[in-house]
Image (cartoon, one colour):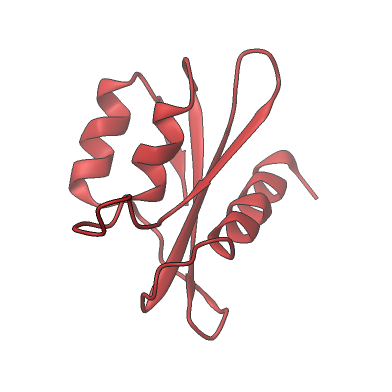
Length: 102
């Protein structure tokens, strides 16, 4: 299995960590400069007023990352299209992410 597929598989596993009651679950992963793998998933903030997106939660944990991997799972566990929303894409670009693989 190539590196990109392994990272996407990890993103799918991260999506399973969410506790938010949604119609789909999103996971995101990236590799830091030091080689550590950072994971995140969509979930509720402490106030429960808005859902925090996996991509923005992930990038806040990183110094920099060239590539972010995103996976979306439906409630039945099937993978579905996981292109990040426009706000997340803008945020990722502002943090110098060069590629988003989904």
